[in-house]
Length: 116
Image (cartoon, rainbow, N blue to C red; front, side, top):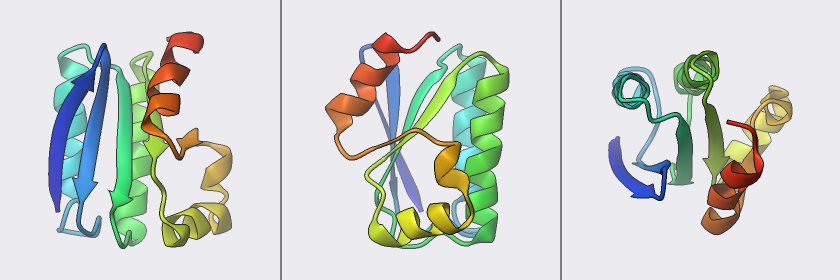
């Protein structure tokens, strides 16, 4: 898996590419998010439009990153869910926890209306 980082204002967007699975992306994601939080960057969007597959370890890591960011007073949102990932989050009831967006501009704008 590959993670490209970019900023839109004070919002950090992480473009994930490839599978988020045990040993292939879960540690990378954890390290990246921990690094951002340590820098005080707490408005984070995970762009999943180029992620074809997430296994249980990858899903667990996304939940853990959400918890890490939330505990630091930040917010983590998901962007560009494929049908497969949307179904996975729906089955596991995680869609009720994450804010998800289809458009990057809507996701970025949601931070300015949120209390972060």
